[in-house]
Image 1: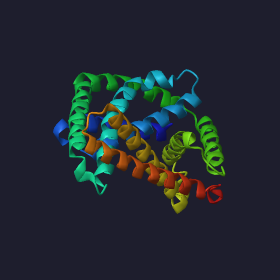
Image 2 (image 1 turned 180 degrees about the vertical axis):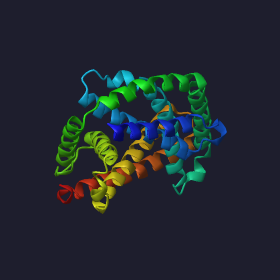
Image 3 (image 1 turned 120 degrees about the vertical axis):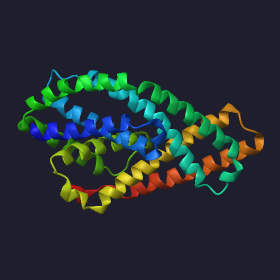
Image 4 (image 1 turned 90 degrees about the horizontal axis):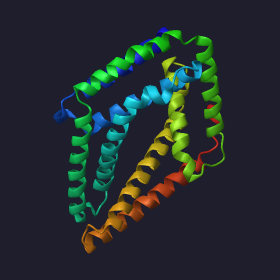
Length: 261
């Protein structure tokens, strides 16, 4: 399908542009953009795998997965730092903040040691294989896939409540639906529905809180900070945990989303 080829070419161009960016010009947004582009590619691969039994999603996404995970580690540290900087007692945890920055520098170095010219060349060698599968993908099968994920999304947003352990998985499935339906401009009308944007935003914000809480727990348990700073980290963890609980209740308070069915 030509539309899938065009979409994939746009995604690979974006990924290549980011990977070819000099390390010194990478920003917080650069890592975020790279992760989003890779998520879109994985979502596309899911569609192709549905349409073709011979397409191996894990095998074809393997190289992307390496940089997705590495960029994810850097991204988590950046999210942690950003949320902590919003806290009123941030000035009392400067030692922890300094360690975060050092760890980010280390993880960035690891990321750039992998994403070299040789790695980019390996990625580019995979692209023709993907294009061949995209050319063979038929509209009828693609429509069946879109119907499948639309039913899946409707089932998710029609729930009366989420469980905490379900939220991240549900968020990823909603994102897959958004990415793949956008290829065909099938969700342009639903884009105008504010509830959908609000749900996606809340799910993302809740997940950021969970990431920060996990990192703070690890930092507190490590006992690498002085007693005074540890107490501040515990206090901040409690505040963010409270925020995550409020977001969780807010998310469940808006369910079910009958307006999107």
